Length: 244
Length: 297
View 1 (cartoon, rainbow over the protein chains, first blue to last red):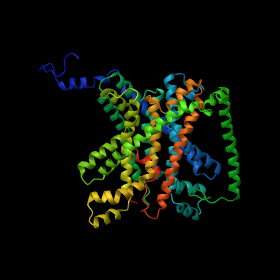
View 2: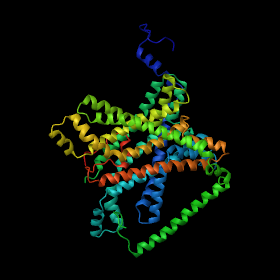
View 3: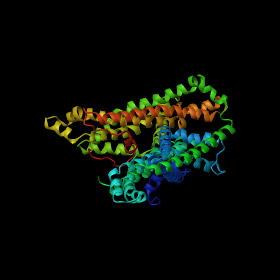
View 4: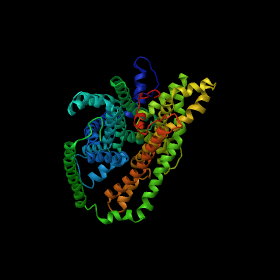
């Protein structure tokens, strides 16, 4: 700052607002907000893809005809859902990494932590994905499948032509909720030092004075991530839902 | 067993199930054996590392005080968040837009923000603007974060509870001449409280799990934080400590979940009430921003 704020000297200062803005957002200097939020987004996407795959497998086990697999699916969901995500994420770092030297194929400290956090997030979120999918399948009335069988459709046809199309449509809403919860949960990765938004916020609050402003900026950032997801996917889920 | 996906099974399908079961057991056993082998190689199964948990010392020094702090934070958050949530939830149902809209904004805002961000904010607030001692600050911060977040979720649970009642209840109450606030106080709320009990209990599970954030990030001496103190004191028994702590969380939360679904079942079957209930599994849905509410069922 060359000039104290608020002093207006006429011509050589075209926009006093620009300067005021500069002073107010001075604290952002030296911090990479975009990168932190980008890490949050990356964590979210990577974990979402992973937990969708593992969660679908679990759901297939839970609704399948093999009692043993059903038991495994149920046990997995009940155990994982009841452990705090924090415990799981910290375990990936202190347990897997420091005790077993698991690095998930990276030599870089930051990348390792990112991958470990993603792994933890997948383990945890897939239990919720599994429950969302299962509840989606359960909304399809048994009569639908019975009618399809009565028409002479075989197993594959019943599944692909009648049951799954209806299940997919009713699963959008529950999966959207899981995705939003996951987005918020990525902040837990801060516990093992992944430099995502929450960790940057903590650092900035410790070093800068503008507590309220920093919090507002990060609050707004998360609002921008979660609210549109909620609104858009909420709209989509209503649009595609099967009216019963 | 028949379900929407497959019919009751004949002899052929049953044979196939047996084959798949055997294969599954073999794979599962191989994975478990591999895990056991890894644990054994790293010496994590040594009796020395597990001994403190069998004898009382680890419990009285680390686990029990940590667990008490976890439960204290969770109970405080629930007790403070419940009335706030009820207030916000009822405000959101108000006929006056100047009450309804601000309440809606508050609820949507705090549901959209991660609870860790709220806790970090709380911690900084307390150190900046109050003279609460450094030792107490983490507890205050954890409770503040949890209250801000959970009162919004509970507001939605309360709203869902009231909306789940048959419309005839409010209509009949108005018909016999009760005012709006009497309808709410005497007719809707008492029934809604019963209807939302399962959801409240399962939100308690979420609160207990979220307190662990305080232990990991805010130096709150809870059950989670006891892991690192134990593994440094008892000589790198990280795996053992994690196992015991995770088991404690599972036992607490599993009993709460079971209790919630028992309550739900009981309420659904109850002859006396309207059968309205906010299910235990709706809390995932109610804890995220956006409109999910359905009308009375």
